[in-house]
Length: 448
Image (cartoon, rainbow, N blue to C red):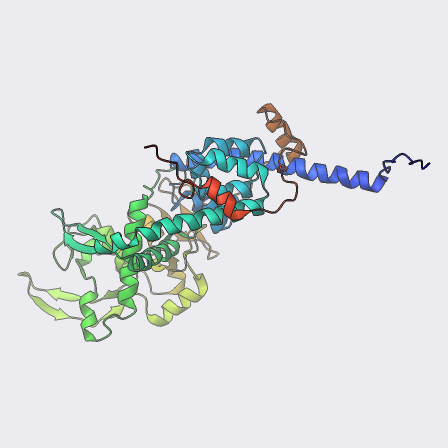
């Protein structure tokens, strides 16, 4: 007769109990941070929708970069996720309750729609962040296969038309082959990145600059693509002169935009006098003397408003736009005291500004000057100073305790198990998961 000794549960050591407590505290605090991130994204979405970033900033992501210290890429991703969650209440609720991590939500919002978010919410609850990433990649592969089936039909409809409209604005209509369209999209993306990647400052008070819409940013990007292509020498011979944009402006109007005088493009289109001053800041100039009847009496030699050697020194010193929070590398030279008003061509009278902020200074009323110590000072149209780095907001003595109390006040019962996935170590069957999750991979059966 064999007697079996009863199983004994090992008594955990004090060290293992302490490690378990630390692990639970980490998991619980992580869930609280995810709940706080949901509130942060909600605030970002409202701030973006109401255009609160428009005081000198190019976009909400740029404002976040300047004001909160986020990396530009991380700031753009926060804005993308915040916008997506506005139409995905189930995923937004899972993040707010601490059930889903920000990493999972960020991945799921790349493919989720109001029709599919419920099943994707289950994926986020049951799987790890790595599982979610794999499923999202598989989901997107199915989407690409669907797009490939439509490629042949799109190929037959390719076309491009460029013509002036009745108001003088050029109209562009077209349908491009996928590879050609991809090149154009990549070029526009690169141009938008160059124009809007760095965050300009958001001044306190003062009238807001009208922020460019998505369509306007696209138009700006196309203009930069065209200018860059021509500057790289598509026609490197003498004929490249025809690509220059020529503005004729009277000396009186250039020195003082309030004075009468012409300021026109070579083809006769009118240009604001202050716009001519901005263009003249960093341009080639030719002085022409006219008789009273308009006949040209003398043409001076071509000179640069900023000589090449001075331009190189300016670029080496500033290394990009000097507007607080911007730093964009593609920048134009700006005369603090305009050369048309006697400003000297010296390094201490120059500063680099990107196209957006150069226009803000000339046409929108923003101000820039250099103090006695050589520091550039920027102000809003109302005269409010724009700090180079905003001061940090005040925090409570114990931020984490305040965060937990806020989440509990909002009704979020968060503990160490809230964000833990319902996964027991089994292998992810990705093909099967996609087949039951993706609507196109598992189409509904049609009834006859």
